[in-house]
Length: 228
Image (cartoon, rainbow, N blue to C red; front, side, top):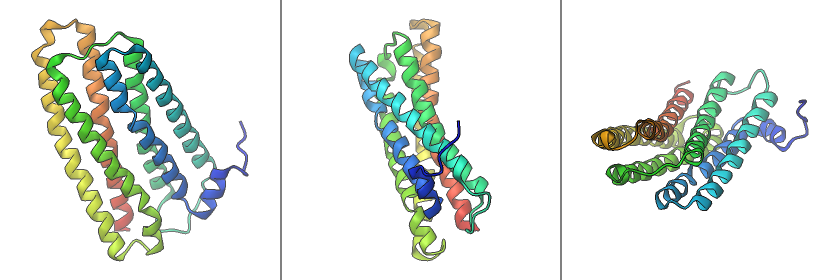
């Protein structure tokens, strides 16, 4: 398929290579914000609500893929900026992996009759809350990219973004601790559950944990921008 050069995203890219990344991240964030609703519907065993939320996630994930594809096709081979093209592509890839992971979770919980084990409920909801917090931090960080360009990746804005990056890293470290606790809780009741359900719950927990991993990778990529 040939992509039209008159697309709105192509226009954004001509203005700033960060505008489509920010638009993409907003779409990814909308996907992240649906995760608690998806898990809540699962916990309540509300099949109709579960399927509806999953459809919304699928649409947002598809929208994010479209933005990423346009970005790759319209990005110039060289940029007159202190940022490498491959670094920008790496950044949008990390963002896109977040919505991909959430779609995987929604597919698992809609394709199977899943029941949340009581033993993991509190820890899992704590994990969700921490994931929402770090995602907001990552979103705020991405929204600062234009201002960073404006000041030439220096000055007070540089220091502000560097502080955000440290915050994302601290949050990711905290989420690692929560993940270990949730996994141990699931391990404690493995014998009471069927083996297939246990496998899929470990997969769901892993995918939620991957969200913060990708956001830490985003922070590392921005740190690379600041250091150049």
